[in-house]
Every structure is written in C-alpha cells, then in structure tokens.
Length: 235
Image (tube, rainbow, N blue to C red; front, side):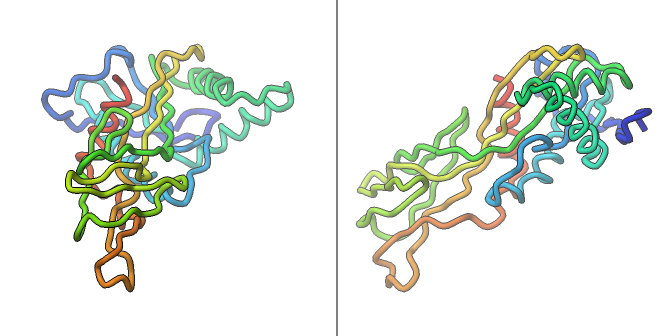
C-alpha cells in the first residue's frame, strides 16, 4: 500500500516474451502503470476493452529483472480526483498538467523512473483492398458476398467495393500513451492501433445483395493484436 494514497501495487515478475526488449523511453528503472482511461471517460464502443488492454499492458511489461508498480483503479481514481480538484482551485484545467501533478504525487510515496498513462480512443482505419491500416498497424478485413454495393460507415463516410476489395473507413480503437518522469516532465507520447471495432456484414433482410457495417462482437479478445498495438505506441 502506498502510504497516504490508498493505492495498492503488484510486483509483476512473470518473464517477458523473448525478443521484445523494454522500450528505451521507459529507461531501466522502475515503471508505474496507471489504470487504463483513468482521466478520460471511455466511449461505449471501447469501454469493454479497458480490462483486456489493462491485462495486455501488465503482460507486456512483466519482467523478472524490471519490476512494475501497477496502481489499482479505486486508489488511483481517488488520487486523480484530488489532483484535479487542486488544479481547478488554481484555475488549471489542462489534462497534461494533471498527469504531471499526479506523477509528482505518486513520487512522494514511491521511487520510480517513469509513469505510464494509457488511454483507449476511437479512430478511423483506412480500408484498401482487404486491409485496414491506422496508427502503425494493419488488420485484415473480411468482405462477404459480391462486391456490388456502397455502405454507410463511421463518420458518415462510405465504403466502396469493387473487384479489388474495399476502400473507405471503418471504426477502430487505438491506445494513446503518455509517459512522464517522476518530476512531472513529459518523456514520450504515442498512439498504436489495437483492433477494428466494425466489420463488413451482409445487411439484414437484403437476401445477401447488400452489405452494411456492424460493431464486432468482442473485438478486444485478441491478445496478439493488443500486444502489437502497445508496441506500436512506443515507436
């Protein structure tokens, strides 16, 4: 328990996967990982991804030589509210100023080199052929039936189908990260694509002649894609 903060911590000592060294921006010292979307409310489409992404982050940084402090959500949430109340009294509303002050408050209770603030956000993935690309990753796109129709998609756009596949946009989720030093200095900011939130399906009651976009079921149930996206956010 971090004294005065009510924040539980876990020592992550599972060996990291071979071939994936710790990102240089994090340094060689202790890392603190803040709960996903601590400071930004998740939209309904990405809220189911908070826990899977949290688990993927802990697994990504697990190491037997570089322990990680993972803050629990109730304690971290209480501290964040306290930090923002203090900031509002001083007339400051900047999110990154809140991150900096949060880092300083945690540093009063525990020694660390870097603190990571992860946030799930929605994004548009550009579709070309049978591949969607965004924020440093590519994902395969399934196209059912004949390529004969245009369909409504994310942000009132269009998906156009032809013999080569599709072009347009689909909704996707990305991981935004902000890394701060213990003194509250921003060290790194990045974003990596995680998963597609939409897929192309046969439209209901169309006898297979029309296509539509639909939200995917359990889009975050792909640990390999989450891990790839986390890595992309550090490049």
